[in-house]
Image 1: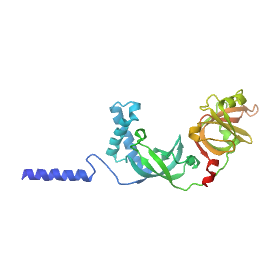
Image 2 (image 1 turned 90 degrees about the horizontal axis):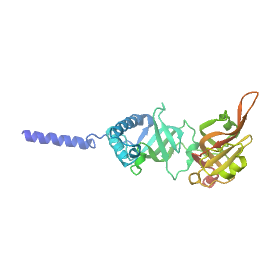
Image 3 (image 1 turned 135 degrees about the horizontal axis):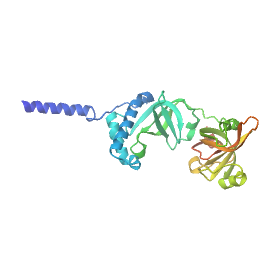
Image 4 (image 1 turned 60 degrees about the vertical axis):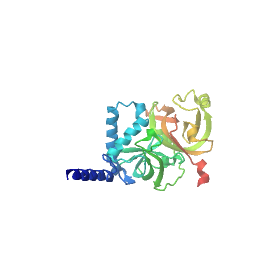
Length: 290
């Protein structure tokens, strides 16, 4: 009798484990979350992974290798966080470096979201603070270092009206308030007046415009009525740019040349420099798509 009861108990335990998709595993069939719903699972997983990675003495290189990915997968199984799964996330958009940060309403939780390479950088035209819904694969197994991020992202909503609205360059340059002036993240829309190489820029304005922080050899000039911005870009990332192209670029902006009014002690920047274009959308190149 005892043996029969033992077998029955074992059988019941096995069925329970199967029903829960494996003992010790949490799993959800849910495929759509708001960032507020997603935050608890995500934060718990991040915290657990940090603790386990430290316990295993993983190096930074190992953390972003397959070894780190497998550890994150185990942590996700414990917390119920989706892994290698297509999801729709709703949250508040903030622009990041080469990605979108999707945040919860309290802005305490943020997930990096990388748009599919086939998708143009139109997302820089979506104002920060906009609520958006996006779809992608969370922690894709095919990319070991991308765990904890949403990849191959597509915009679900809202519909975006992609409209060229040139920036007032004079107003944009007002963020530069002294010779060391620097704005870490800014979006400029404008028309390219001239394409140059770094050497050509140096030749023309090298005597008075500081371009020492420029990271690339390709440059473009965006002129305004009362000021100009010189951008340096990697054309393997932005694509070929030509004079006359109407573009939107995102990156850091710093002082290139300006002066201080002796009477008011107020600094006016006349030429700004964007040493490295983080993101670029070319309106002219997409005219045929409209």
